[in-house]
Image (cartoon, rainbow, N blue to C red; front, side, top):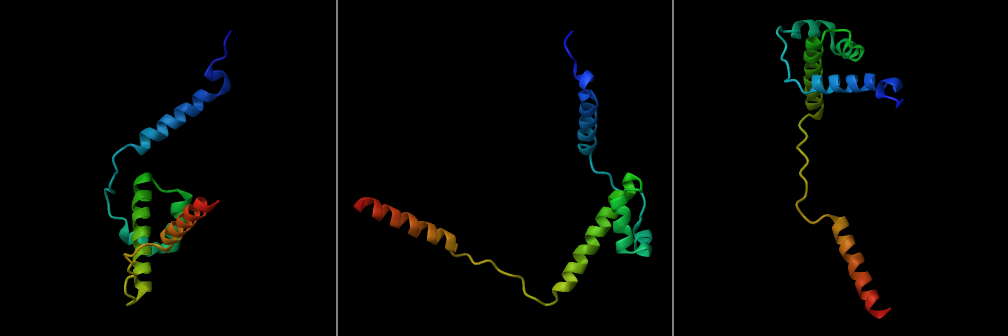
Length: 113
């Protein structure tokens, strides 16, 4: 009698994979209530640790993730001060010049040897 996927326990993993795909493909849910005052009372580090522990319901976890990211962004922007934004040069990158020189050298040496 041929062995089936259930004999090796693969069916269980396939069901979990399908369930996780289905859950991630759902439309994003916005929190039905405002958790901001609660998060501010707990503080950034406590909310971050609760987020890692995943002890809250999914809606609250989603709101916590957004709140922590916004707090991190605000802290990052505040730390930059009056520093002007770095502007990338529009010229040709140095590695492209080196690559062209190496290929040119290889072509010239190939003509003589």
